[in-house]
Length: 195
DNA sequence: TGCCCGATTAACT
DNA sequence: GTTAATCGGGCAA
Image (cartoon, rainbow, N blue to C red; front, side, top):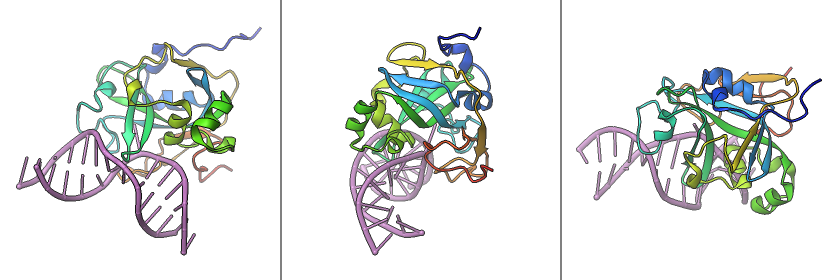
């Protein structure tokens, strides 16, 4: 009989190739302080990738990316927004998965209040939006993903996954390292080929 | 020290 | 479709 209680994601889950972990996260559940939902869109980054923050080596900002897998890397984007990443691989791979969109399932009233919008599709559909809805900031950079306030659970159902080019980058823009749930209404942008 | 620009978003025309 | 907002990181000088 199938397990009723969702399986928590361990550090070992993240200690694999970022290109395996990223699609594996689609359909997983992310809660932060009890607020969150299902991951429906992520992107993979690696230190050999010109678009990655870790490409030019370790700095004060990206130090967490060069540490062990299973930790949160949070950075400020465009001086305004926060963006959340999960560090993967470890061993100096400096790889991470950018969390781009969530299908809200827990704490919707709280998220609506924080975001100032009512439409559920606008609460967490974008990396900056979901950090505002979950109230994740630079203060949480470096936190372990297997301990509060984080709670991550593996997906329990089969999910159709699509891949495509990453969003908002100019370097290595052709690499298809964006992953999402096929047909989800909560993506930050639709995937081009979702036939 | 100064300069450029970005893993974004919302509000425009 | 376009663009302003807004500021820290990274690199040149």
